[in-house]
Image (cartoon, rainbow, N blue to C red; front, side, top):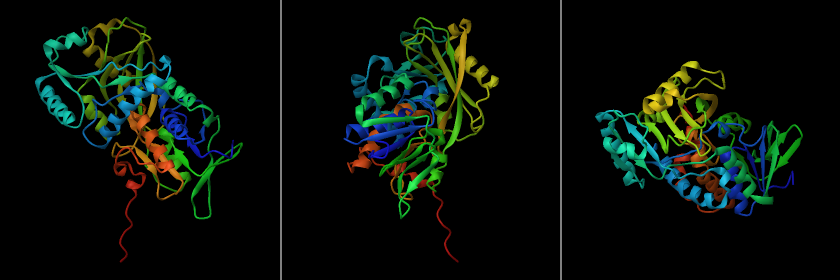
Length: 386
């Protein structure tokens, strides 16, 4: 089996797991390789958001809407342990100017297939009784959902059955190439693994992996922290976030940015985000980031002011400059496909990404236009000769 798969997937996070699952469902044998355990990277540090509410109309929203339907299908297949919860999202405006911006944003999303219901200030507490009293209003997005990401990845891999083999604790140190430079497998300290196709699902490390093939993919890590409270009764019923979260997601700034994102979980703890900053792979605790997260959460939900935060953790989002993932074959390195650069949306976009990769490998029709996600789109054009 080590030298016999149809496909190698490098990365055992939720995107890699989805690639393996859909490839196995299409009849392919798959070897998934990761230098650590399942979900050791961005997936294990994620909140499990499956969102359409934060996406501008365009390619990423189309990918998210496709994934929304696929997650519903997967929820019927995977065990309850993945905690799929179609609880919906609530986006909050603190003043009338913010409400006007949300109204315009929701109108454009609605034309693209998103369901959004306006909530005047007087109705906010019907959905979230513990919200602060002085908010201007918001919008309810019933298509938003949540999963427990690490378990979702593990069960996707398990659902691939005997066609999926895991090689964990194996670092890819190089690529095997053919006579014309085509990618034909990977090298690891314990030996080579050969296959006609290799998928880069290495998340924040996707740029490093691409360079093994001699191609440039400018994936950078974007650090974020999550605060986890003590278990509570369900004081937060939806994913609730302030309107400026959408702006932060779309920003390319390297500086620390925070916007309140608060959601309850079936197990009881409340998860509090969101922060973004580009500091390389530095996992150092940022007291300032955590202070801002706590302040933002208690401004939205004053009841949380008396609640203990039990822990905090950091993760790295795989950031690409245009905020779109790289998905599909790389013409610069035949045999290499990319499935990375989803930034903070990888868990939500994983099923659509996996389906696309499986279609690409088997010669099927892609479920949507792949041109916006071309891996080579960042290639600088050569200067014209003098």
